Image (cartoon, rainbow, N blue to C red):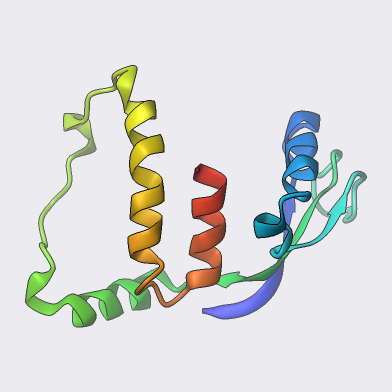
Amino acid sequence: MTKEKIYRPFLSIEEQNEWMGHSSDPKIALFIDEIFTTSQYPELRDPFGGVLLRLSGWLNIKDYLDGMGEYFGDRLLRTEFDENLLEKTPQAGDMIKQLMPKVCSIAMDWVPCKVDFSVTCLLLQ
């Protein structure tokens, strides 16, 4: 993983407002370098501005998964996943809300890219 700042354009004015609200939360504010309400780059379609995230970076997925395979060894279950077998139910959203904090707290103990994963966890909770 490389530690870089990442500019993420807002897709709507609602998303801009949501991020501005998140910025007052100290747990999330740690990862926000600056919020822009107007376009910052003529090369991008960012009419609503965007957020410049700090303590972020890019993850090489192949290397990450290879590393996880080495870390877990025989404990890793290698199998195919068929998303077509998933059923969408009204309870699925509630289940995700209940499981996400548990998954995040477990993952934070061993995920090598803790900073990025914690932002994801905070936003999903």
